[in-house]
Image (cartoon, rainbow, N blue to C red):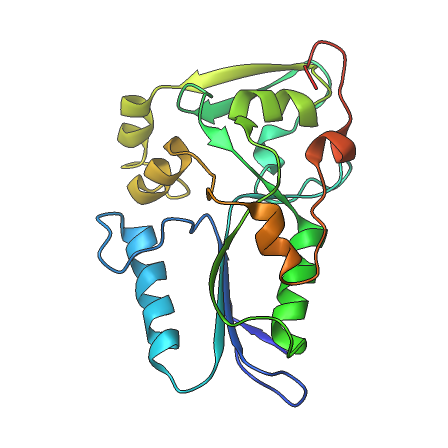
Length: 205
């Protein structure tokens, strides 16, 4: 199984093609958002093929405290430092642990007893983005909020922050449904981020 632009095709021992991307819980070929529209179009092409496929749409991904991962790297700082957040920080997030996601993807590709189709996956906990940031920084962080109009204006001048990405960051990163039930279909028991990160002083568990 080799990754190729986020889409995996069958090799010996692999039972199906697989598409995975994070931040795509709202992927739709008809979306007004360019990022979500292109993801939806790619999924549509895979589903039109004659190869059995598994499409996995995930929320943001996080790792252990000493290796939080690219989704949240810009939100982690030295004790007492400051981070910037697009929006007011009240966006809901249900991040999934990297071990859970990789376990699910491996099962989807290699285990013939797991289902095919399109699946939205997330972690089992939903909190406000600001709370998650405080938790990954053990509570010792200053959060600076970038209002929506300012973020969208900056998108015209900042290559890393496109207008489409700004809209994604301003929206909730949740999937709905029962994430534990979805993960269990692939033999995965989801990590709770309260268990992974602990509950630092001043941050509710």
